[in-house]
Amino acid sequence: MAAAKIKKGDSVVVRSGKDKGRSGTVLQVLPKDGKVVVSGVNVAVRHRKPTQVNPQGGIERREAPMAIAKVGLADPKTGKATRVRFETGKDGKKVRVAVKSGEKIDG
Image (cartoon, rainbow, N blue to C red; front, side, top):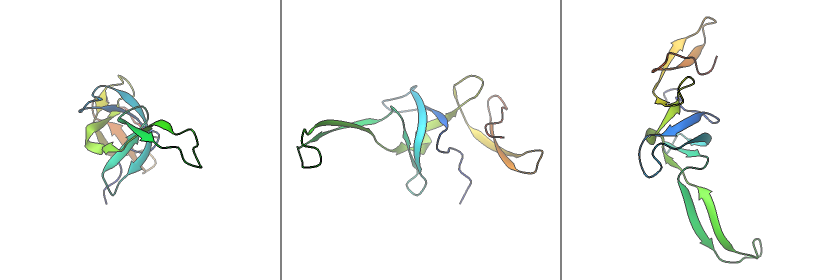
């Protein structure tokens, strides 16, 4: 399995689809499905009947998973979407680096 280029807590920008250009933080990564859940992006609306747990019922809004290929990591300098590459840091650890600016993302 390849190393994860996008991780939980990362700031990302949506590159394509109905939410193109919007940004948010990654709430969850689903590597087996190749999907991510981003806060405030790809919001699905469900009409719920009243139940014992939720006696009021009503409209529920929730972020739905979206393809990891549709999002790009936000560049630390510019805030625009960038690709990610890996380099070996000074201490011998693998660090993520933004391709556009060359900024280190973690480390």
